[in-house]
Amino acid sequence: MYEIRLSAQAMLRMLQMEDAAPLFALVDANRLHLRQWMPWVDHTKSVADTESFISSAVAQHEQNQGLTYGIRYQGRLVGIISVHGIDWTNRNTTIGYWLSADVQGKGLMTLAVTAYLDHLVFGEWGLNRAQINAAVENKRSRAIPERLGFQLEGILRQAQCLHDCYVDLAVYGMVAADWKKRVKNLN
Image (tube, rainbow, N blue to C red; front, side, top):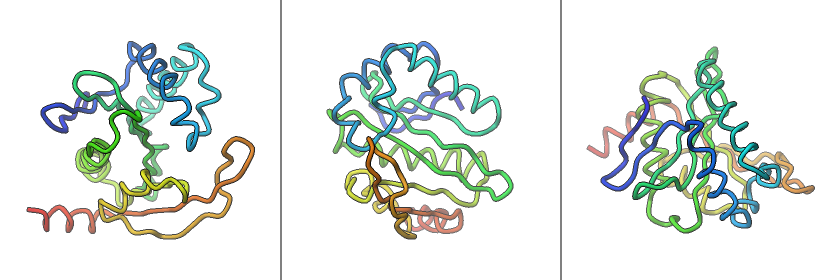
């Protein structure tokens, strides 16, 4: 699934090597914003670093371990959504995402996570469980699973090293049966 339409102005498009320069420019322009919650930002110093990231995303796809999509709004790249591998034995995955500061508050990430779950996680892949982890203090990131009906399953203490200090992660889960009930209730 190369592209997934989100709205008249937004879509998900599979990340490709041609996205390296615009993706690096986006990270660079949002460095302070992203650095608050993303430990990888300081290690992304050049287009070559972004090319390495895209290469690993392509390899992940080739190994049947998930897809990394660029989130596009009004024709430009504004963020990323992907999974951190797939546990095929237990049929579950963890979703990660980020969005440029200038397009937050437009519902784009809610649309992106919903589409990713509908089309891939609980659709094409037929997984049973999706998880989203977010730093306890990252209220914007936590709002996405809460808005979509994920259950807060607990807090992992000092689970992420963020710039030489540890932060607690809120763990949210959604299972396929609950997602299907949610979708049915919306119709």
